[in-house]
Length: 289
Image 1 (tube, rainbow, N blue to C red):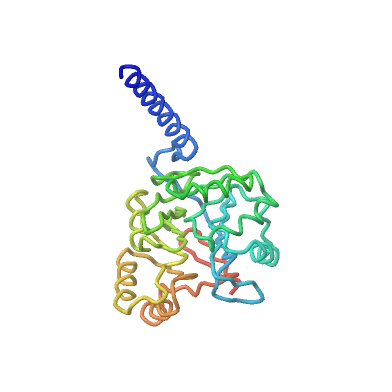
Image 2 (image 1 turned 120 degrees about the horizontal axis):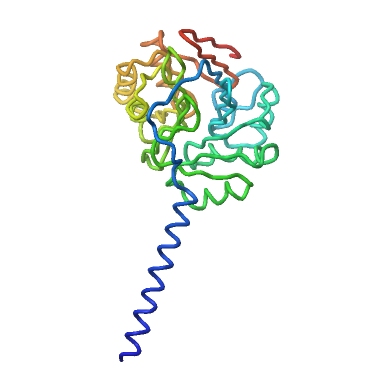
């Protein structure tokens, strides 16, 4: 009996050690960046190019999904990658955007219409670092790593460069993060993927964590098929945050786009694939649409 008890205690101790080692490895693989938000800083200007969106434009491919190319004076960033590597490849070439020069990528969440385009990126920029939500599924993280990328999980809002931060994950489901660029004398440009947790909650988190006023939000708002009451509530919440430009694309829904166009034309931006938006100082320039 004593021998059995001794063996059981040994096995229990071994399991504790293994569990601790696994936890440590897991944490080291996917922990947030060590950078803390003491002040986000700013960029002089930013150029936003909508590479993939299901709102059609010109002769560009428009599958259901989203991918946005961001360029500042120092960095080129891909936010989400769309559902189709061929669409990302063809659209980037037609828009004269060289994705082999990307410095990093940020994935909002793990749904396929936001990640599958990474297969093309792996052909032209295999050693890229990709920031993902810390609670992204292990299977999705492993798939991204299998393409040759370095994966960094982000839990809390994290500065990744001067004036640029990943807005920490919120639960939708799934867990989802966003990207914020602080333009000097303008404010935060917030990029969202699908806004499963709520676009107003994401923008509010960016404002609170970064201590900067939001100026624009661009991306999917997850309002396709939403009731008129919900559309009204979300629009009102965004306007009350002081946003000056709102570009609803992807899963935002035509009803929300039309509501914003009719009721808040001064802030509505007609987002679609191929659109280029430049923010600098107190100026916003739109082209490509």
